[in-house]
Length: 279
Length: 81
Image (cartoon, rainbow over all chains, first blue to last red; front, side, top):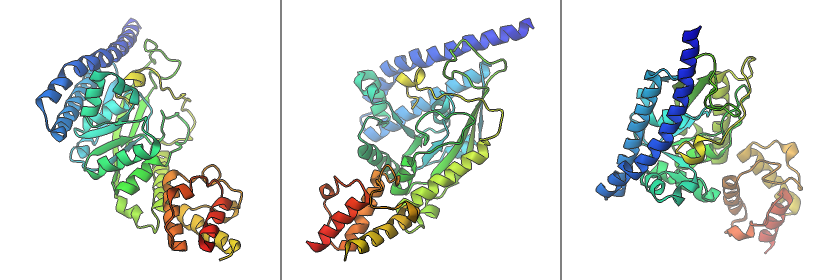
């Protein structure tokens, strides 16, 4: 009994600790490591690769530490299949705050869409711009074009097609933007499924309130869709719609939504996401 | 081409390109809200309408277009110009 309470207390402490690490550690790196890389690397493409790699390595260490210190279990299934990706749109459901971190810990060369507000801070700006990330406050056409261009240039891009955090127990409602990007860029789509059970850090649940059992974050690498299969349709618009319904179907199968026993989780855009790389 | 013929053509495109059921396509149906088109779809549709009319369509000619009826009017104008 006492042991269990202690274990739970440790997880609560660990939660706070790791939130602090990403906040403080991220800021420190933005002021030291990333400017150093930027200064030492003049070529923008190499600079981008190096900064992306540094983020990848940090997130890998971060996920490894969460797991090793038993704050939560972090399992990656099939992560090695993400190593050689090029020009691929990485699509995932979005149940937790750790999603981007987990994905980036597995893919060394990847970009994402981040809050435009980060550009106001010169240090964060150096980091996100150096990494080639795309700001979310561009007008919709420019945002779409930026995503298409980066994929065409051979970069990988993470997108959460729900647009906001997943609501557990409800079927995913996908926006069409990701399918427009994939069809316009002619980019293959790598599907990832993320689960986080029992839920943690969700809305109305402060970091010190942890579930009875240790949370298990799991990233499973799923199908890689050949965009050529979809582009066989006579119209691009039709191909995009077929892609959306395929992916919706895929997630309803892999996540088994609609089954009883999954508690509703309200989407939560506060906390980490407000300031960090977590899109 | 009469207005009705333009409408029939347009309705065909909307069904083929965007999987919109025929019964939802009416002159007062709003393209974005009711028929769930997005801005990229609109670009595709304009390209298709250029094929139909054989005329170059400038983006600002379609700026004020909201409904299926608006598109029919604009295309009809182009054809009778």
